[in-house]
Image (tube, rainbow, N blue to C red; front, side, top):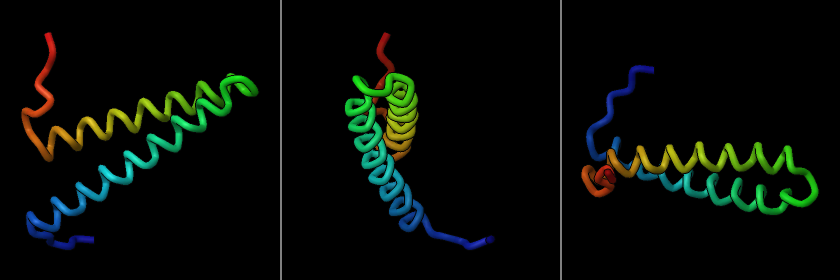
Length: 73
């Protein structure tokens, strides 16, 4: 598992990872909203997963576009 990849391939992989994280974030957000009235515990779990994917997206966006998401005071 020591494949060497060039910078272009690394960027493509990060873009795919960001797209996947966005898709998962949307899916968990929808699930949380659907479960809110019927299963509050499962809705809370889905909401936590949504936040986790939002964090992954934020990190990947900062790597791919440095400085675009400057820290707010």
